[in-house]
Length: 170
Length: 100
Image 1 (cartoon, rainbow over the protein chains, first blue to last red):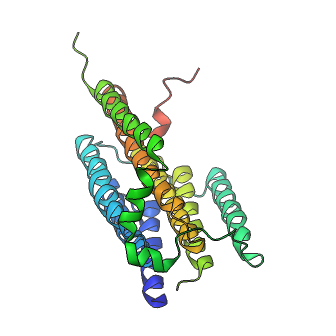
Image 2: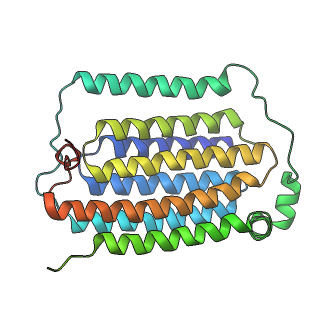
């Protein structure tokens, strides 16, 4: 189990580094799809099967296809003017992100991680009922208001996208 | 059972790579992909804490975050599309329409 996790973890980091370093935007998008697949596998190991399926369907499927569509639509001739020299800005960016990483990592590596009181869904219940049924039950009872609001948000986003992207005829 | 700290470390690493991508790359769409990567890193830590604390709330939150990410991608890409029509480039340094 642990070995499989390390395999998928290193593969996902590799895909993320691909987004950072590959030249062609198409290659970046494909490497990001690989990262999303590996994260989906890690969700399965965390007993969140619903999230894993959504990750592959919505992220690796829908959102990345949208990215690829836009990339093919906007075939910019002059690819990124890739300045391959070390500038002071890049150095600062590296130092800043290193600082961010150290700050995040120090939260859970300094001493024993203190988790709060346990919730009502231990692993036995999740395996017996299934995570999909539990999430569905929560979505339509405790979180029904957020669910309705997020539906409206999605509708507004789609209408807004159509309005922004349509051609204006004079 | 995977130790929680290892998954959180992976999440922190992915988030940092996303931050670096936003700061180093100059192509708008690749910067956008880096933002998606950061959102995914946060999702991963939500799922980890949900498992570690025997709670389902984190998983429901991931559902909402994915919906918001989809909405954000749709609106952002259409903005990029309409900017590309006028400036014919994807370089973020050329997008200085609002700069005084």
